[in-house]
Image (cartoon, rainbow, N blue to C red; front, side, top):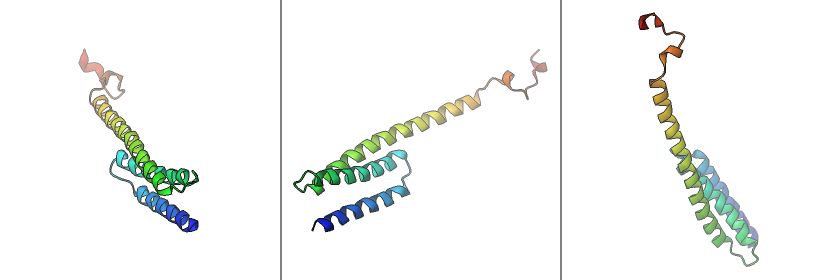
Length: 109
């Protein structure tokens, strides 16, 4: 019975990691998938090692905590990407032409 539970947990974790490697459109979604899968695996191991056989409970709690943490981290990464893209747009649009070597300053006089 223990071997069946162990193989089931390993199979579920492997399947979720395989699905998560496909990724999502945003880093928040990918982070939630990867965090949930990793949290479920770690939670199952911790729950099983408590000595009372709480493998499923540990997997559920760990998966939920991992998904929340991964989603929060991925969301912050998405915000950083959007801010970097916005700043890059304004930096490229309003640059100082006098610093550009291709700019001919004889018309500024």
